[in-house]
Length: 116
Length: 422
Image (cartoon, rainbow over all chains, first blue to last red):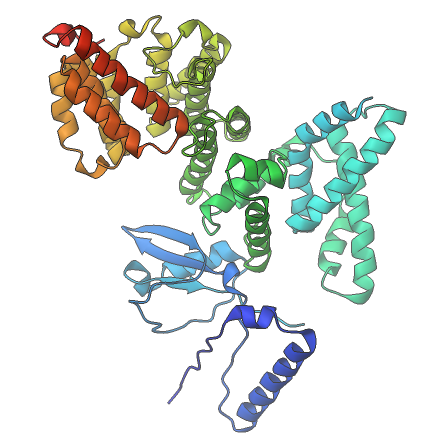
């Protein structure tokens, strides 16, 4: 069985955190990932860019409707994920709009953070 | 050479130069810093050496060289910038053709008006990068604090970088949708200037002028698009009436009350000519129809000469493109002006979703007045005044309410306004 771990936290908490605390937290995440790897359970994962870099894509009446910011409704639930690699946001929007759920639901696009 | 002259040249050429720098460096923030440095160098050098033949080329070279220095230094510690550096070093040193500069500006417009950016950020970014307005000027124009505008701009620039919004002209299949957003952003800037919804100043002409500048730029860059021309014509024809729209004591004047000799005839001529060009492309659209309506008003020497039947027909066409409550209301008013106040009131009955708008109640009041029902007219004006968000409009509506009452006292009602609405 595969499981997806979804990590929710207040972004502000991290952006306000002193450099040293943040480094400690990152080191802790590194150990966490290593342990998972050693146990053979890790399939992949990444930090996401902050919500200000998010775009929400919907397909309504056959038209692609984008909006700035993360998905914020509470009546829909996170139901899956796809990890894609594209040259730029326009390409990613194209793929997001082709998602079968885009016509009823909302697809949030978040860039991954690449460290080094 | 005076600093003021240099400032004007920089502002005129700045959008072009900035767009080219953004293409080269792929970073709006860095490009803005480089351009600011180049302006500072111009202030130093131009008074001594005279204005260069090609100021945009001069500014570009200075900014590009400075950017290269920065990247070379950074490249020693980070290999992140080496790809940009390699591309820049391979670039021919001489400034490219004008066509390339135009493409860069067009790319920049599409980046600013990218659908993944917040609508407010789209217009702020366009005013900042393409029109060279300062954060403070934008904040004042949108009646928000400088901190809010600055935050908006920073966020938008970061999003462009982090989410990788591409610096490209959209592909053919996406172009119509993307142009529609650009035109919407420009028209929003124009309307923000033309009718501020809050505050005392009714017409913020600077913002209208900037929107017209963006409209002209779009026409230059997308000459085959009929709606691009339609929007420019609409803005010119509307803006031509700006000076006549507010009396010298600050009251709002309706089309009927305006002193038409104050209308800017040059702007009207230009607007009409551009509308003709647009119509000749035979691709009708909502901006062209609205421009055609504005054109009919512009052509009437007196209010009573207005071709209302034609305007009502155009609103009918506009409704097919834009079936919004506001357009439905304007269509109803035009119908009433063409066919008489009773018809107008009947048409205004079916607009329940506009009940919260002062325009609807003011329109009803005007028709009641034409029918001689001064009592209902006055009450409708008072009701409208309670809903208006703008001081100038509120004062105007209350004055109309009092005037309607006055009519009642002096000339009690019947039939007075039964002449054909004109």
